[in-house]
Length: 323
Image (cartoon, rainbow, N blue to C red; front, side, top):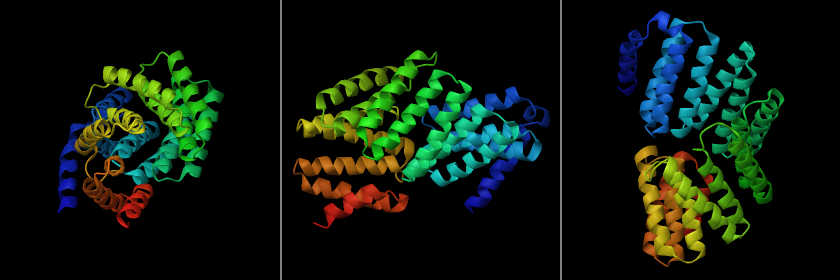
């Protein structure tokens, strides 16, 4: 029944787009922008519906490879936020093939980035690193805006962090900060960089530096995103780590609960970030010797981890519950 309902809905949306409109690049870019605006607001289902309907209409009514590829690329970006990582990789591959045919180097680089991101979330860090490096090398070759170089530095830093190479990660996060501050772009991406730096220093047990960057992330994040934006959950989690290191467990738990509620609202229950929030809460409750609460949140993380294939959270939860 669900499949039939989706088909019915899409069928009636197609006539909204006329052939002349779908051949107009400005019109298509505007519609993509509408979807990305919903994505930025955290309305991921709405964003996906808009981009998917546009994509279907374009494939049925135009042979403009570039416009279809542009829609593929942005569809893949939204699929990432929905936790549809395999689907995002498929969208990125389709976009890449089409951009290669149009010989658009800038968008080829973006397609590599999206492929890297999909593999990153599937914890295939070797593949993620390959595609991120391809993108970075191409961007430097074609002299893109420093804001885009900031994105590549950040992406590679994230992979190095997962590979437990925190010194390399910190170097690249600082490189990302430098590039972003040099660019003419807005600085809404800056809190994510500072969260990365905070985590890098935290992994190196340099709590003072970790707290400095967590403070920066909090200050700028609240200014550009607001208190309840899903991007702020990463800031809250970074700050909660600092509080745990100071044995301020209750304050950390409050922040992690706030983060969990935001993630449940925007990402849904069965999502990587929701799973990780449950696991973080469980870890902190266990450190505070609130074992009943720790068990409750480990069980929730285990259920979500099994549904989403999040191996780290599964391992952590199973180890605790086996005790």
